[in-house]
Length: 293
Image 1 (cartoon, one colour):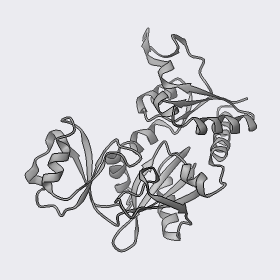
Image 2 (image 1 turned 30 degrees about the vertical axis):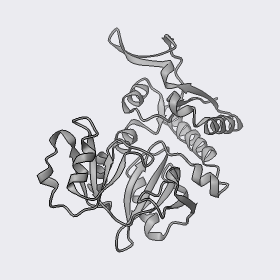
Image 3 (image 1 turned 90 degrees about the horizontal axis):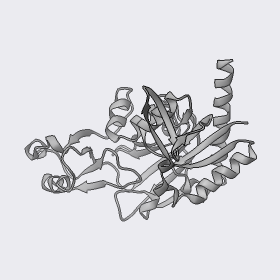
Image 4 (image 1 turned 90 degrees about the vertical axis):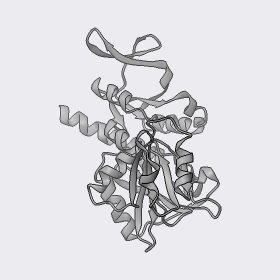
């Protein structure tokens, strides 16, 4: 029997209890031993010159795999170094949880996206940004779920917003394209299992969690090809790829969601993405076992 951890930070677990129960129920149906583990139970580091991972003060009994629902690249790397297969892995965590890294990496592979500036508040000089066309969208590099995303209509507004953050905070500053509309494609591995259109008439952000409306969506050929190109550059377990649209209607990358929630997909369909994800993990673990034998 495969044994795994479903790892959440406790603050996120409190509002995702139904999702956690769903994971465990589906794992039982597939004959997988899946245990919820809170991040605060664990301590990781180096002891006696060797990597270690403790759980509640004693050496942890490590699982075969971990479904990582926390955005901690270093911790993911620790698990991987100790021989645990992690979904999503540390390379996905490193890029997808940093909007600047996402843009930098995918632009190198010709993925279309809005014009984007990388901004560190420690190096910010207002004069360097004065001649840009506004409004623009300011995003904290590590923000998620539409948080820490701001519409700035002038260089003065940009300056005021940056003053609310500590020196050295990192951002991206993007041109504003078609506001209030995006599409999230849900991927398991490199396969799109569903997509949702998100729209808002009152906010330039279309996130459902921010009051936007959503509906099930069928990707166009052009959108499918773009998502496929992006997926081919990663070893996803489960992820969300968000698309926005230029003035000419062409799809553009918005961002990648590493720890993707699927409430909107479940709201509008009977797609069992959790089961599909666990089946994918089983297949990956079986291939790994065959490769090691």
